[in-house]
Image (cartoon, rainbow, N blue to C red):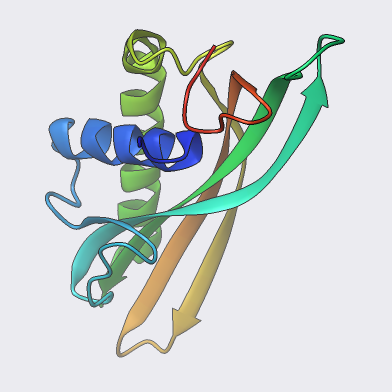
Length: 153
């Protein structure tokens, strides 16, 4: 049995960001699957957000159009230039995901690909050691049967 489509989408995003050779390098994780210590250098963390579904056909099983939020945290831990470094990493994530819509279509996951929705900056720490993150929310649209959340339509 294949993973839930949401897990497949997050896995595809992780692979895309690792292939893109961002400033985070290999420090790209999916929360709850492959946690790594955060705070050393640059990192990217991918996490599942909320999702919504809408039945698009009458009959059984219902065909669903789903909208899934993916939360991506771009983080840096530095003594200087932390805002610029986090902004650069966030830019690299946007460029990589905007350029790679084809991976989602190839996997049958895209009834519209993934799209940038919003971002929020957050600074934590003191002047001695600042951890700065820019949290982006991306949305994926896909179709599946209500009884088959692991298989795209």
